Image (cartoon, rainbow, N blue to C red; front, side, top):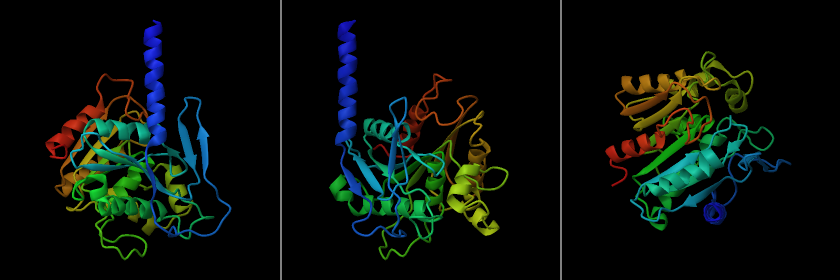
Length: 304
């Protein structure tokens, strides 16, 4: 028994050490665009479970998880949190380590959350950071040992809204970046995602935080990503639980149907139970959706 306990503690210690020693790089080399002087400072809160929630991000970053046996594919991971905070562990760092097991180099994106005090236009800030993350990973592909034509984007919950926005709004990048590096993800993975900001499907907190309490009809349509799918939308993998009371499963259904309509390759896995925010572990089923994801990535050629 003592040997088992010692083994567990050593494993836990090793995992914590690994999380602390991953390289962290600034998303922007100089001034952070779409920002203004304010008293806003980043806040990190430790939960009872030991996981960390981050809010009021001012300096966006990427945490780099290089795969030991890299296959050239990369994924940028966008944690969720209703555009109010970021669930950095179970929807970020833990996921990155799972990708490493597949040979994929992962980047956990700490993106800025919409904030009128510190940003000139809060509605474009998360997308600005997601697009910059894709640029940066491609620009430094040789350094990271990846193929710039094999960069995917994953998002959970509101991070899924961000990822689906990046996957449908790439033709006209936000901001005034002169760099012409592509900001189109090569594939998308959306996990219990916020997709629509319509009155009937929205997650109210996400919409209010991103667009304000009284957004225009045009803004609501623009950021309802089921309406923005085209034939150029990247191949997509979706996961959702039917009993999700936070983000309606119809969000994933709407995106799936839009992909079908535009002949975008799409795969969806729905579970009857699981609720919202289960990360990689839906405790209501013996099925592991990350195994389904690995099969999908393999079939798409991303693991070869």
